[in-house]
Image 1 (cartoon, rainbow, N blue to C red):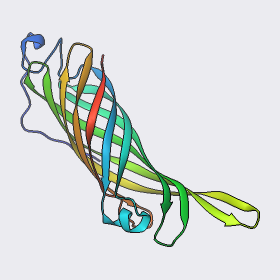
Image 2 (cartoon, rainbow, N blue to C red; image 1 turned 180 degrees about the vertical axis):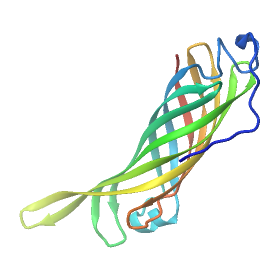
Image 3 (cartoon, helix red, strand yellow; image 1 turned 135 degrees about the vertical axis):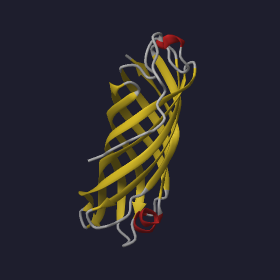
Image 4 (cartoon, rainbow, N blue to C red; image 1 turned 135 degrees about the horizontal axis):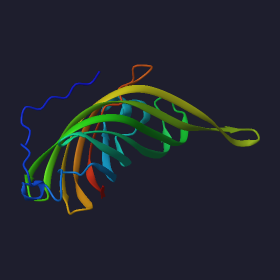
Length: 196
């Protein structure tokens, strides 16, 4: 069970719109949805096993307010590498890394329209590879799959108008597959979304 406790919570007032970081209510609304584009950097195990050290990461997340400026939500994201040769010499036309996350975060108002998120969560990773074989009848392929568990910590900076927000995000995820291979990764990028 995930417990997130932050001692510094911005006090509420009668007129949220006049408080630092708040536009028409809470820092990030009652619900917010965003898409993100990150660069993802894997630790040494992935580079040694797959020959992959970094790539593009595309994600989608949805958060709902449960307390003033405290949000719970989910994120799904994917990073793909193509034409990969693993440590055993096997060739893969593609290797996909998926992250499915459940997170809790606290939004901290800074100045009008600007806020900072600090959060953590747990997740599941899924690695999906397409291995290619060259046989007598020509090339053929087979799907290989792997799964594991993860937990992550992150910080986001957001700037919003009443219904739209943009920002920068950074995250470190600790992740291991069922064979004990380390899929730890660091992500940094930007996001944009809607506030409801």
